Length: 415
View: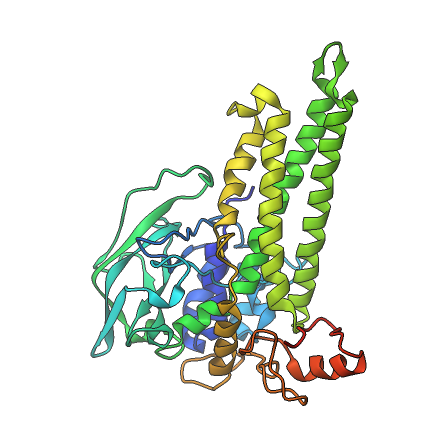
């Protein structure tokens, strides 16, 4: 797996999408040319959500392709030509904070003093911590709750910025993970991305793409595990015959392939919905992440079992695939807790608030808000009784009546 990771692309996406023209000129070119690397700092100590994305995987991919999603300033175009054969994928910010998956309750503070913010606090599980040159930090500049959070860029070498020890992890050992510590760390106000109070909304905008990314990583590990298992069964003999001739193992392998194909189709369906900005993109991305990470880990685990004792040895790749894919069930909303119903509400609010022009926000910012939930012609509300992002109730209601009570067209039905 490549060592060019997603945190770099998350930071580039945030700066390119929500930053001012001056911030784009300043930060994007060195990130695009890999003269500098970046880390995304959201997770805080005490949380159970772990941020373990591939450290540098997306620098030539999502980092360079993030401008495909929004308008790009001319100086960056020269840096965006060489990966032209890659598709315009999205890899935005991730959700994971000190109170677990409750991204609105982070505690790292940034108090304004003149033309600087003074940051105090710490971030845990930061991919590339200590190695990256740029840190995109979510911190509290206002009161409690999501509207008190802002996004600030901190550069390596800033007085007051330090790092914890390198974490010893079960998997994902190809990238360093450390705590990032702020002790009266003074950062210019010019390094703030967007307006004060927009940090949480910026983070929420990235949940969909992040979930597709994590699901896709699981898919790759599962596919490799299936191939290794198939080849192992062909050459390994027991009782004078290859294991591949054992019908029970054939059934097991067929089940693994079926899970793999189902996961791939769900991920592709969600990716298409997100690319087309369809109304059901939020739900499909959440379902794809939940289903694919669970099923693909099960595939990797079964692959190790079918390798027998060899699969438990460090020389066998399947053990690494199993260890690496395990964390995907925790990233981007852990299985069993997230994706959660509240995500839709948060992202709907994010769409609404980010729709408003604000100083420091790039003029090329393109955000859709017309899919906001609203009271439908029949007087009913959406299925949950609350607002949900990109549900498109007007369209769904019309289809509801046209089809005699059955909702079609990809939206949610009514309660």
